[in-house]
Image (cartoon, rainbow, N blue to C red; front, side):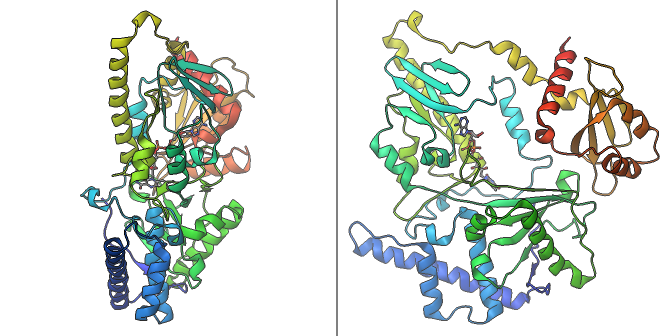
Amino acid sequence: ILTLLLPLYLPDGRPVDPDMDGRVEAAFNQLLDKVCQLRQVIADSVPHGVDVSLGMALEAFRAAHGVAAEPEERMLLDWHLANLEYANAAPLADLSMAFWDQDDPYEMGGDHCFIPGGNSQFVRALADGVPIFYGQNVRRIQYGCDGVLVYTDKQTFRGDMALCTVPLGVLKKGDIDFVPELPVQKREAIQRLGFGLLNKVVMLFPFDFWDGRIDTFGHLTEDSSQRGEFFLFYSYSSVSGGPLLVALVAGESAISFEKKSPMENVERVLDTLKNIFSPMGIEVPNPLQAICTRWGTDKFSYGSYSHVAIGSSGDDYDILAESVGDRIFFAGEATNRRYPATMHGALLSGYREAANIVRAARKRAKKVDLSEKTVVSYEVKDIVKDDNIDLDDLFRTPDVAFGGFSVLHDPSISEPDSASLLRVGIGARKLGSGSLFLYGLIMRENVTELAAMEGDEQRLSTLYRDFGTKLVGLDGLGDAGESLISRIKASSKK
Ligand SMILES: Cc1cc2nc3c(=O)[nH]c(=O)nc-3n(C[C@H](O)[C@H](O)[C@H](O)COP(=O)(O)OP(=O)(O)OC[C@H]3O[C@@H](n4cnc5c(N)ncnc54)[C@H](O)[C@@H]3O)c2cc1C
């Protein structure tokens, strides 16, 4: 459960005065109340309503009531606005004043929590035993009264029905060719609904210099147009097993973030952290590893999650959820009016469509001869078997283990210069005690040398300096790593 403590720091590292903090937060909430009153008046008096941006309305009330006139108050107000842009993954200038918070009444209660070990555990558990074909980029979906053909750049799949769960950003971009075209009402809803940006910098440090007992801290900025840049930090020390810090980039800053190089962005975060911690006499070390997300340029998402843009409304979520001819069904966060922009919204939409697909199948089964039914033709069994083998299980009985290091050798070759798969556990205080794992490829002959060394610290520096092995997440091992893992998995089946 996240602690409620959220220290905020001014650009020069001074903590924000708690009285001013309380005052500005109250003023921010009053501005939102004023916007609610205004839209009620508009809804009551203008028959078909008019919509403007939430940002414009808030700024008009701020100026009219002289809210946050002092520079430090203005920075604090900007921080709250950035927080709102974070929640919506969009600049306030893009949000519909009328409907941006249409899902508020359905918000689930309870505490905000970090999931120890990460959310991917849910996905892995849900995907267990499900035949999934990775690396298949869908290009075209053709549908008609006979069924559906899904064309990827490698293969064609045939089925009675298909469930499309690609992000709204992909639908907006038109990267998938629907044949025939989707109904005009659906195409218009796809264009109207917003799909914005939120980015993160994830940094693994050698130790938690920020005091890992604090889950979050915030940072204010003088430049309003950059208010979303690293405005909030999340510490994952207590749950990830390693000294991990995440910096959030929201609003306009999330867009400009993707125009800078990852190196420049990491340097900017480090400058921000130094501004906060150096005045306290705390030295900020360089991260061991850093990752900058770029959801806007990722061709499998083109953004982060949906929001109600100016001119759109909750109805558009429902339109996105409608099936076409009981052949193409749609799920994903942007099809869930009540819980958009969330993991649970995406999950619930999947359950909803599973039920709809069963219903459509039953309806059709009454009409057609079952023998005519087409089935997806693929050789699932072998592929599934391979994907079901969990690397964590294989590392339970490694070929070699010492300190926080474990190694699986290539089963097909025993040459001294053949590659082995190395896994290193990174702990918050002590290497090896944690549950955060990094991986690398290492020559078999170097494993013996590492094993003979005193302590993990020495091993790590030899690994980096002498062997040139870079530790990365599993996804970063590249083709050589993937094929080694396949060989290890294949051999474990025998
Ligand atoms: C930075 C960030 C922070 C977030 N924080 C939270 C949070 O704290 N809590 C929360 O509940 N939610 C959060 N979310 C939102 C949540 O992650 C999403 O709402 C959810 O993952 C959406 O699920 P989905 O299944 O709709 O889409 P996705 O998870 O995006 O799945 C769509 C899939 O389609 C695939 N795809 C795309 N195009 C193609 C194609 N042409 N062919 C084949 N496959 C394709 C993609 O690769 C992807 O695997 C956050 C999102 C971001 C970006």
